[in-house]
Length: 79
Ligand SMILES: [Cu+2]
Image (cartoon, rainbow, N blue to C red):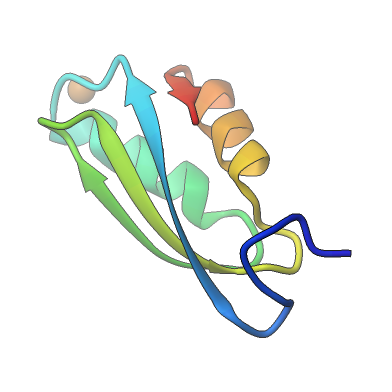
């Protein structure tokens, strides 16, 4: 079952908000945490905008899993 934007073989793009990032090191931690999720293709951290753009396929990656990964890494993720 798909939860919205696309089927399992299509590429989805989502942006989530991430609070608590203060420098490039934080951005690197957030990027690595999201990249660990299966299906994630590309992670683009906007440190100044406190946002992260994510490209992924719709199989197991989704916005909830991104937020969870960000929170587990010690930052504040929100949709
Ligand atoms: Cu930092």
